[in-house]
Image 1 (cartoon, helix red, strand yellow):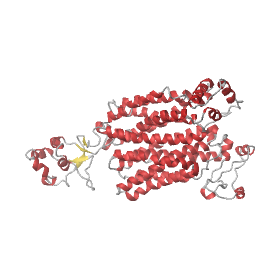
Image 2 (cartoon, rainbow, N blue to C red; image 1 turned 60 degrees about the vertical axis):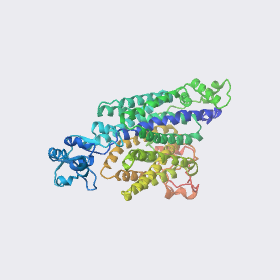
Image 3 (cartoon, rainbow, N blue to C red; image 1 turned 120 degrees about the horizontal axis):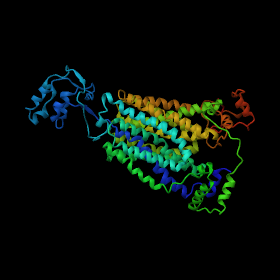
Image 4 (cartoon, one colour; image 1 turned 180 degrees about the vertical axis):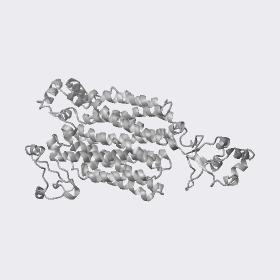
Length: 587
């Protein structure tokens, strides 16, 4: 008997599940959102210019005059950030010392000689920073500007590498330890490492702590999400997915509020880490997954949790519940088979679906992280831009909720990625219009947020049960290469602001059209074996909506060993268009 049938007996979505979702799943999104993106403000790069020791006495009160005397301008009129005039500043000091404050206010550099013929050199004595937005950041403290500006990007790359390693390692520990202990182990490690980074004594010590935080970020959200999925019935799993993403977006909005109040990087680091210790108050509320307990051979513990679920949900169970549970879930063990990554590529259809899903997953992860990193670079108020980047995701999820049930997965995925990609590419036409740039950015963020929800659901319904976890892990691990590469692409935008948006938009458009090759899965039974997964063919928009009798002309699989094995299986699955409900021609 399937565990979902047992869950129905105690309530598959009652008061107990709602309490767990509200008290555990929603707050668990905060550590991931806080620690993944707080670095954008901890290592923010404010406006800066070369420090001239001789002109220090006048810098605070007459900063414009000092800049005019020592800093060259670009063609657009902005002051250079990494170069200064090579001139005799001692002579300027003798002149300035005999000027009254009134004269200094009126003074212009042209009165002291032409500057267009003065040679410029890189900054020699450090930098001054505009502290109107951030009183202190990692960049200011260790002068990570000009020839060291890549160090900030390197920190994001190292953070992404940590996420790639952690996604692989902690994914196994979650199945080994269980959902509950693994979550709190990740949480403790993340809080300690993040808080310790507030006391970093140099750039490299801070970088090491950020790598440790990066190890835990992907896993910290996975454990409570998997637990919530395993505690509810199949019909409520879309709900859990939507709620999880809403909580994550609220975490981004809340992070913007925290940054607005606390802007010193050391205090900000503590503010986004130490309060998360309150999540340990849920330790006695958060249960272990009874589904996982049954899978590892601990039916008595699973039964105790199921009894608590039944009691809170107002369902009565018999005293022999434990015995009955064991009898229901005991079934003859089939011959043990081991599956590996190569099984995802043996059959033609499975190989194509795996490659397409992985490509789309890579595009979605890269663009979502890339757009979130890009928000402060849009100009204007960086904190407001980041707030909007998180807030625009919320209406997307509310529209997505009924849309997945009525329009299916594939079309929503395609439209979301296409709209988001076109919006990003269209910024090329409005580089001088900051308001339109921000609007197109928000549309792109809405599109990728929608696609980011649909893809895992579609992938879980396409991968057969025997390799579902393996397939999802493979695609997500490959996709984690995106957050490693995307900071470098954003760094390239220092010379052309819209270049990262164009690259990300192109990636989204390619992924969107690739999604049209995947079959629709709405309302269909999940494939259980590799043979059933291989029997679900690829499809394409231009090849659908044909009469059933014409499908016989479609290409057939070559008579390989896998194909012969399929002939002994039940009748091949038919793929139905979600719009016209007619059978679709396969590729």
